Length: 140
Image 1 (cartoon, rainbow, N blue to C red):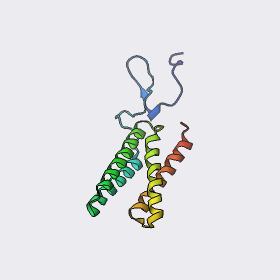
Image 2: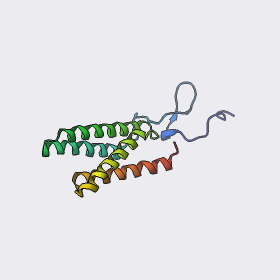
Image 3: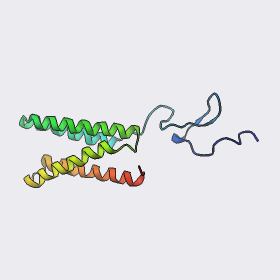
Image 4: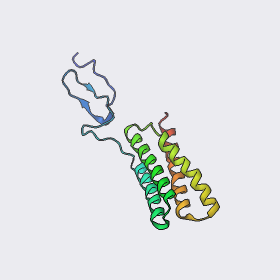
């Protein structure tokens, strides 16, 4: 019977290969336009962290705040990019947000000032929670 040897699984991205050699499943994580699932939450978190460093520099002239904000924001952004290309690759995002949760949480505990330490500690904790749920949802 013709076509009996075709695979029966659902294609990733919902597309079938109607290509040159043999019709079948396209083994890719992208759709026909080449777009990937983007980690918008991760990019937003990275932008928040980096903008916090910039705001600390503008407001108080703190170069360490600028450097730490841009470094941690850059690492979080790189982690979001890695997650966009491979959803299982969460380790850089998890380490950046976990580190900021601890450091800014201690700073908030000592100062009791919500801005900026409490805000960054809270959003970092939410990011750690999101990544933890993602780990439970899709085993690594």
